[in-house]
Every structure is written in C-alpha cells, then in structure tokens.
Image 1 (cartoon, rainbow, N blue to C red):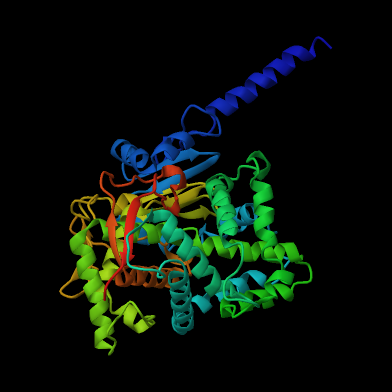
Image 2 (cartoon, rainbow, N blue to C red):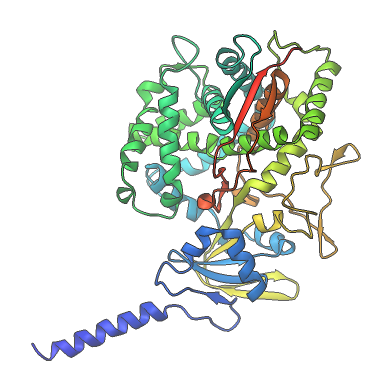
Amino acid sequence: MSFLLPLLISLLLGLLFWILRGRTRKPGEPPLVKGWIPFIGKALDFGKDAHKFLEEHRRKHGDVFTVQIAGKFMTFIMDPLLYPSIIKQGRQLDFHEFTDKVAPLTFGYPPVLGTTFPGLWEQIKRSFQLLQGDHLAPLTESMMGNLMLVFRQDHLNGAGDWRRGSLYEFCCSVMFEATFLTIYGRPVTGIRHGGMDRLRDDFHKFDNMFPFLIAQIPIWLLGRTLAIRQKLISYFLPQHMSQWTNNSQFIRRRAELFEQQDKLKDVDKAAHHFAILWASVGNTLPATFWAAYFLVSQVEALKVVRQEIVDVLRDSGVDFSTSSDVMLSKEQLDKLIFLESAISESLRLSSASMNIRVAQEDFSLRLDSNRSVGVRKGDVIALYPQSLHLDPEVYEDPQTFRFDRFVQDGREKTDFSKDGQKLRYYLMPFGSGSSMCPGRYFAINEIKQFVCLLLLYFDLQLEDGQNRPGLDPSRAGLGILLPSSDVRFRYRLRSV
C-alpha cells in the first residue's frame, strides 16, 4: 500500500494546483480578474460596493473585462454605447436558462422549462401581457381604490394633528397591502385580509435572505429561511386562494394554467403565486420609498409635483378636497410629466440591477464594427446600468436628485449622450430586451398613485438632524437598493 501514498499526494497536489490556478485568459478574451480565493473569486469585493469595484476595474482594464464571482465567470460590458449589441444578441446569449435554474431554487417550485410541463413556460410568459396595454386600466382603477382604502382607514382618520413615523415602514405597509389586494383579491368576508402585518414581516425576513438564495447558497444553510418560505408559500395554497374574491385577471389566468398541469402539486402552484408576490413588491417597495423621500426632502420639487397633480385633477373637472376620495385614471397619471421625471430620477439614483445573458457556446461576441471578444460557453455576459446612471458625462452632477432632469420643453426628455453619441439606453432600472420586467408599467403606475395620494392628502416634513440615507449594497445586481437606515418624518392631514 505504501506505493499508493506518493500517487495520492501527487493527485492532491495536482488538484490543488488546478483549483488555485484555475482559468487562464486565452488570446482574444477580455482581461481576467480572478481574485485569490478559489471559487469565491471577487464576490466579497463586489458585494461590498459593486459600483466602486466595477469602476476601479474599468479604469484598470477598460470597458470590457471578466470577473470570477462565486463560481461564475462574468464578462462586464461597461460602455453603454455597446449595450445595443448585447441586448439584440439572441441566438448565442440566453436569459431564460439562468432564470429557470435560479428562480425555482429561490422560490421552491420545480423548473418549468423542459418536458415535464409541456408548454407551461410559454403560457406563463404570455400571461404577463395581462399587466400591460389595455389591461392596465382595470388594474390601475383597482389599485387606486385599494390605496384609498388603506390610507383612509389607517392614516386619514382623526384630526389634522402632526403624526410621526418612519418613512420606509410607512411606504411598505401601505403599498404591500394595497398591491396584495389588487393582485390577489379580497377575503370573502370583510374588505381587508387579517394578519397582513405578520405576512409582511415574514416577507421581509425572506427578502433579507434573497441575495443569498439568488447566489444559489443552499437554503438549509440560511437559518430559518426554509421554514419562513414554507409559511409564505402555504398562504397561497389553492384552498386558501379559492376563498378570495376580485382577483386580478393576471392571477386568475395563472391559476387556470396551473390547474391544467396534473404533475404540478398544490404546494408548487402556491410557490409560483408566492414568487409573483415577490416580483410585485420586492423592488416596488424600496422604489416607492425613494420616490417619496426625494420629493419630501426637496420643498420646491414637492411643491411643483403637488401642483401638477392638482392641475390635472382640475382640468378633469375635479376640485380636490381631503374630505373625499380621489380617483386618478391611467390617462391622468400619464399627464403627470414632472412626477414621472421625479420617479425616474429616484430610480436612477437607487437602482442597481444587473442585466445578464448566458453564453450558449464558445464564440466571438461582436461589440461594435471594430471589436469582438471571445467568450466561453456558460459565461455570463453582464450589463451593470448603475455605472451608466452615475456617469457624469451622461448625467451632470449625477449624485444630486433633480426632479425635472427628465423633462425638456414640457415633455419627457430622452436625449442623453456619451462621447458625443446619443444613447439608445440611458435609464435601465427594469432590465432590457427579453429580460425586461413585464410588470414595469404597473409598477410605475403604483408608485405614481401612492405619491399622488401622499402629496394630496398630507403635509409632509422630514425630522431635523438626518442625513440622506445610504444605499444598502447587499442587493447589488438585483434591482432597487434598500435604504441603509429608515427616515423619521411627520405628516398631518392637509386643510384643503
């Protein structure tokens, strides 16, 4: 047996050398940044401050480079003028492979691509059309009614004395319940679901672990996250949802699709519905906070946007009064140019989404007419628009909130440039191409509605002695960043 010892040592040394040496850059490939920790690579540095990390490597390596992050080799395309060539590339770069692998692990349902559930993936994709176009009108009307319900019962009762609260908590409590009622419906008895605070608390606990789940960390390593996820999923079991009324057409259609699948268990159907809850509020809640915070923090911005809302109502023959409920249609919301600009500006400052594609084969990726780079099968091609959003060449004084940045001559401003060339993509909080969020129109409408009611019904002030909240980097790459701390504010019913 003694002769085996040198062999085993040689094998172990060879394996160690392979792990430590790992991938090397080939001719024609982008510069390679690996880090010194096997598998982990630069994940820790990226997680601390993704924007700073990428900018440092752009200065060192140029606009295209590959980074090893948690076992993945990610090629970042940092020049926004190159974005169109990536976004239009469909045959050799795929988004759905990543989502069908990661989403089931995150939310607890079986993958729907493949032969197990024939046709289900395409039908699910088509169901998202029910969040767009003409279908937005009934959703907008329902959301308006539910926002008014929550505001009226929780915040518009009593005299007009000052109340104090935490702005992020305030935004979350109202938006979470109103969105839930709009998407999933109301209980058979009563107009509001019981236990909504507990549901929201469990949702936040799960959401705090979301970055680890997306990184494919096994859920059993994340404390009570599995139990919390099971509890959240159980809320959407068919026997529970069958007791709810006034569901959105979107949810009714998805429930019909799931019922047609004999191999889909009730708990799997519930997990799909739970995934839609996260998709509906996971990014919308912090986005609503940032829009509200930036407007309340700037007196002039709040004044202009509030007057715009009043003017649109008056043009429709409505003299607003806090004693009556207000309804704003989708057409009226579309006229609020300054409000839309303020929301876009808050998204520019708070979004840190990552647009990704997975290479389906080894090939030469054409970047422009003069340049190509080699990529390998399984590599992730990534756009990180936060670098675009904070580029001083594209946006003057990019760290400053300017509520009218996206308004020009009374219309939406779409002309932004870099290196003297007009950018096709200049604001990308919702992804791009085939991976663009299908619920983005509904989300923007929701935020508009919330802000309209907030500004119409309340006087609002931030409490003194607070700095602008920072951005929590833990969700870098996943959408809207949460505030690093909540903000104290006070509000009272306006005398109108």
